[in-house]
Image (cartoon, rainbow, N blue to C red):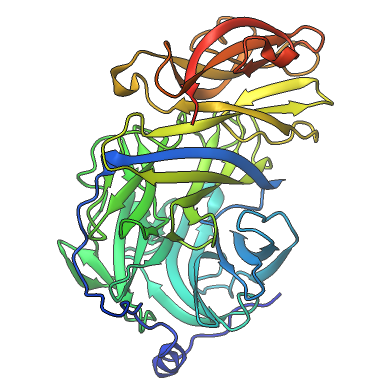
Length: 500
């Protein structure tokens, strides 16, 4: 399998990079101005349909997914699990085709001896830059590995790579039974002459920031943000924890994007525990988040199997270009373990996200699509806000959508009801049920997740949501029609969902 070559000296690096990474020029007549204040309360987000593109498998989706658009209009994505594989598709979300290995673990004793994970790719002209997460001194069963970041370049759009050497290392050394170093970084063009990198630091679970000139982002050029200044070297320097000041239950992931509409850096992160939120920054280091999360998630346990579900390595990419330079059409890409499943049941999921910016504050700001899936072999209709992976090898097909659930209770001060997604444990086929909180555990149903919230009374631009039952197939489902679309009988009104 192809592997990146040995370290390139700095003078050769300069020859490779000069001319490949110019600063993004200003348009004719444009002057550089400071970012204007953005009304984050005016942002409206709708999280759309999830697409399961890869899996189930244990050796996929162990990185922040990244992709680029090829000259012929197709797209190439990079999935990793120790090694990195290239996958081609006709659309940014079309990543279920064959995978070609393009990076493999390095030699014993090297900084990448345990693996090379491409975390982000950046196309500049006909050259691709890659930010590569490396690990060494690994004893994974003991919870031990040592992380760093290197850079590589490719002249064939990511099929073969040339190593430029390490660019980011931590202040600590490999330590028994601990995760050490710095890694899991992505980088983003800040449109001010710098690339910005966002990394994880295991020793204190920090998110840290670095930057390097777009004209030369190679080894020795990265500087860490430390105590208000870009003053510490990327190789071995210290850095400020960006999570400080965000508040309890909040934290940043390290998968960066740049929202061109508002000229802001965006990072997904934790909000209120395990919920997936989104954070914005106009200065690359000070972040504030929406009050409503993008996805409602119960605490997830990575050691599988477990009753919880896990959404990991979430990244926001542009739905049209696949890059981390965002328009108002996004896609949320993440690794996914369903509840009660083992480590071999991991999936790569792509989810549409539509964003709009109003001239006034909006409430609610976030809605998550409720979709109804049908499995004819299992005689099961499943109304859920989550991805619907195959069950026992039998696939669920999209039947319809039923509006959007809220991601917070009592949005806008209006009473709401919390819904849970459950499944029967009775003999025979599964029966998925959307019900009020507490219903499932009081009966013979297994709780899967919090689905979201409905208004208890009609609001502007809401639609009713009914719980229905098909007695012939012994299957519950949700519908916006009181006649249950003639697929069953209506049992009760659950509440009112956002219509759009």
